[in-house]
Length: 217
Image (cartoon, rainbow, N blue to C red):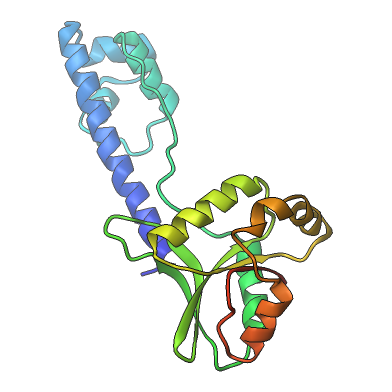
């Protein structure tokens, strides 16, 4: 099962849990307000049977606006927020970027995709790990870097937590990205001390680069 499938399964599982919890809170608030399901439904324009399904977490496609309206009628606010839970699913451009790297490297180097960091409860994963003769090297792919400082911090934390002393940052070779990397040269200098061309020379020879590098592909 892929990491993407596991993420989707987790999202669906959390949705069911949250809807059940919200339903229970709405039911308790309705009882405290001495309202019947029919009376509450009439207040927000939905049927008593739908109120019952919502209260029992059995309305998986209920609109957030409906939940917020029910909460408002019962004196409750139902906030909706997003929280980071790991790495984002790679987009098509990132997949194509990794494919270009695979097409360049010699056959002696093997490729593993979406490799977990291996820490209990940690859902982060490397975009790819290169396996050469007696060595492994994690790779992160960025089709269009934006906040380079945030990216640098994220990668530094992954290296620290995975006890990795070197990695590759794979970046699409575009005019925009070359400009971004020139502007971020000072920020990346300590984290990626090896010239990308030198790193590629090592890889083409089937050898492990001597340190972390940014490679344009």
